[in-house]
Length: 98
Image (cartoon, rainbow, N blue to C red; front, side, top):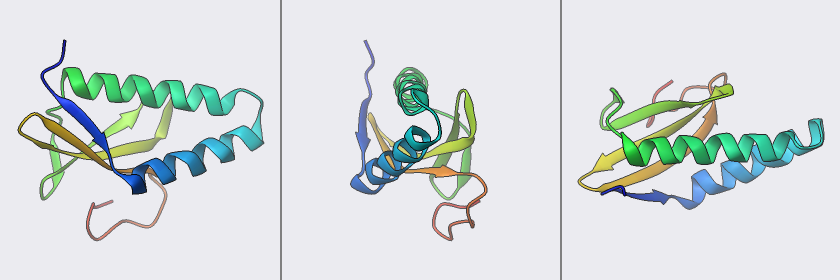
């Protein structure tokens, strides 16, 4: 069992819902595949959250099977906070980096 707790901020959850809706409009079941891949990514974060810091305190991990999406998160003690789920081709964020 993981010693970490995962917190997904509302903004990241809203982005996830938008991504899911887009994939659902592209092909039946693709939205479910994205959600399953994202859940697997979150599980991996709980098991090993210490990816390289990329900008200030923010870390990134790619969503397996959907490599153009990444999760932006912070590890603070035993709490992992997800700030963003974003497509890598979007305009870079001043706060979170490219």
